[in-house]
Length: 141
Image 1 (cartoon, helix red, strand yellow):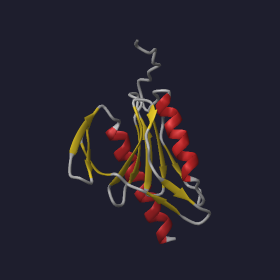
Image 2 (cartoon, one colour):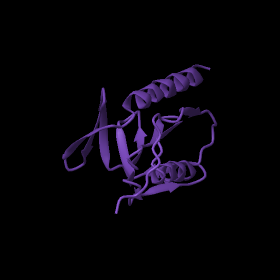
Image 3 (cartoon, helix red, strand yellow):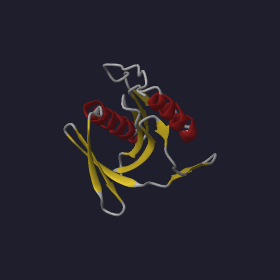
Image 4 (cartoon, one colour):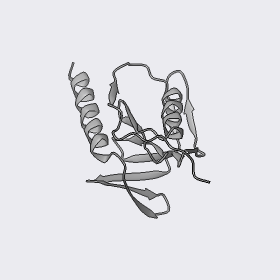
């Protein structure tokens, strides 16, 4: 039986979180909730980008090392491991990623590659650039 899915035409305007302290689990839960609602959202946290799509997928990206973690697939939360303490967090990354124009390419640790079309790759790349520029600006202060 087909579900009624509310679809948005555009990715929700992205934001760069400038706070020094962050709670990665709160942001992960936020983006998974958006994915369950089939909403396209993007959040930048320093070197991390979280995004959800209209297809119900959600990802966490490390933009410095091109690492990726699938958080939600077709609106269903996936199994993953994130440890978050007061002073640091650890993520069990499952993929490497590359963005080439409209293609989002993920490669599993075993070497299997998958090309995904339809993600907001242009907005993701803009957020990566803004996030890196903001970090470089803060590092030079």
